[in-house]
Length: 115
Image (cartoon, rainbow, N blue to C red):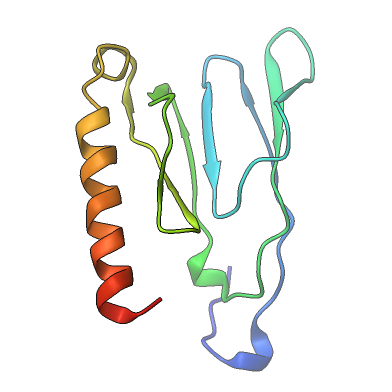
């Protein structure tokens, strides 16, 4: 996909990602809309909110056999933080420390920058 960093070449993106059900974690630049929809016995479809206007080089997605911390920590007023990784360590609670420390760091940045 061509990438131009020009204000008049930015676009809004709508994303639906279809994956095998073996991949429970699908992330994109924007939050997911609802739960995944089963396409058939093998595949599921994830739908995401429309993106903000942005350059194509900022598009990113993740499809993985990962799990995420159930607890989402809110830093400041706008940022939800969770940690994703291999299923075993996340289920054992190993991701909570990094989520909580990221919250502290974001809040310090918000205070420093006045945002």
